[in-house]
Amino acid sequence: MVDKPTSGTLFGIPYNFEQPSLKRLLSTYWQPGEGMLVEKPFGIGYTLNLASWRSWVILAVAGVLWWQSETGVAEPDEEDAEPVEVIVED
Image (cartoon, rainbow, N blue to C red; front, side, top):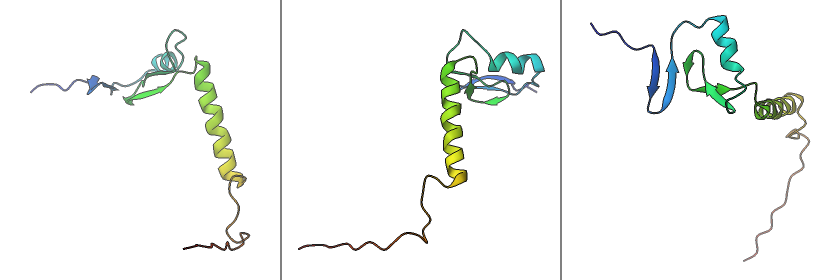
């Protein structure tokens, strides 16, 4: 029987199902010479490279958006909203 490959690419998307070691995990998430996205150490696709300042901007924006959704600052309550009159002219 033919062994299935545990890593490679499928339609241009990388995959890796080998058991990750701690060293491989750390070296994947911190690659100073690479771009913002790097291949995942385990699974399918890409992940953020924490050595890139762009990744930290993305994480900060995601954190602010999450915080706003948790505190309810972004949208008013429906109970406090007043009805709106719409006038349509022919």
